[in-house]
Image 1 (cartoon, rainbow, N blue to C red):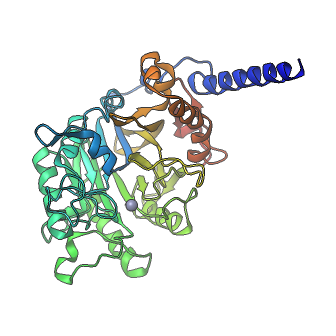
Image 2: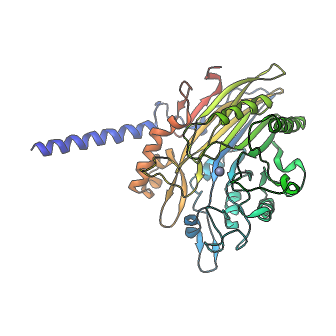
Length: 422
Ligand SMILES: [Zn+2]
């Protein structure tokens, strides 16, 4: 009898626990409001609003390639991987991410272990992975990170050629000796956005001086490097950009907190004229930061930095031995508002994501959708469900520093810049 009572108590506590973590994610503030229905601020005739959406590391590991491989004609199909996130991407005005692989061509990388392609330590993905990124809506990718030279300079160039043929802009690497490869200026719904990308590590690869232009590398924070960074950002601003977005590959892999170098770099970027920092490299989520930045023009601007957006898709998983959530990422939607001549971040939404690993597909699901949509939920196994609930409980702690005012809506976290302390 005593044993039965213990069991009943255990079951009911377990039930209550699962119920509360579920409610936590699905309707925590009881408002029943989803991100996609939030009213924007009253807009005057001179107000423009742009939704810049971003994700972290786009990786292609062996197990993704194996599932995408079609034996019959030796082709690849990655379309199942992003099917559940595409409806969210469709709400962006501009979608960006960090491409942490190369497109050197079959059998043309440093290794060819997987149908002529390869992953760690030398990433070279099937071209179909790039086609899929285009199909789901990526507009711009940063091609600069510690894996940019995994397929040598020839692979760096063929990566740019492939992205160009797909109609995806690339920043951070260059085929020709001009400064254009470091940055891009795009007009998004009447708002001129400048993108600038660099890395602080190249996995020890070095290039002769004659090819140094191929990679935008800032190996350390010193006077010379920072003078160049400042000049590059000034040049971007001189092209009439309304806001500048820096995509930065920095920090230490698998560290939960940003290090001093990351913080110092973000301080400098904000000072030099950057409004949005999208960081990656740690492969797990690190916190974000909102800041009111005042530059030489004495105007206050609301700016935002993400120290690490984590993996968006990869085969890196959570393991009890290291307890690092390499399977969790985020889709961030940075709403930029231009009123008269001032463009600044108005608010940000964050949708946590989870990469599942099934027999036929390795793909990404938005965490809140996967818990709320019974059809999608039914495709998740017990392990997935545990990770989804874990994400609901833990992602706010990974992303939001103490004191940040965050509203939990039905399918996202909302950060209203006006509610934050200066
Ligand atoms: Zn990296």
